[in-house]
Length: 122
Image 1 (spheres, rainbow, N blue to C red):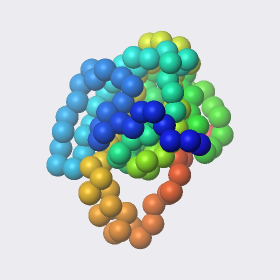
Image 2 (image 1 turned 180 degrees about the vertical axis):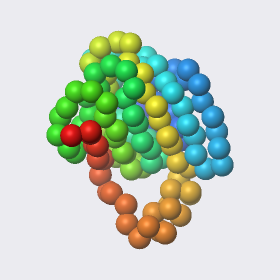
Image 3 (image 1 turned 90 degrees about the vertical axis):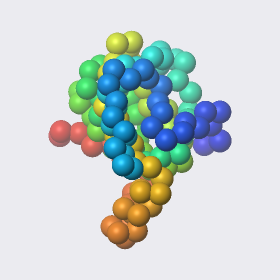
């Protein structure tokens, strides 16, 4: 993929927070999706984060089987992707890690996934 036009800073997404909390090194937010699927372009984030779709049909370019229903996606820092909801009205929970804290966690774990991953209940 080519470089994306949009690179989000730590904890930012295509969405409006319904609630958010900043903890040391971690940001938790529940967001309402604000962009139609057609308007979401390839993008990246400066941080590592997990996204859990809590309402709506979610499409992701992360590795894993394409499914409907609840999906948990992990995106490492800098991964270019085009994750989005099929229809308007989607909601998601995002857990974002400050880059320095994620590097420390990765070093302690000795390994983290280098590409996006999709986890489903199947």
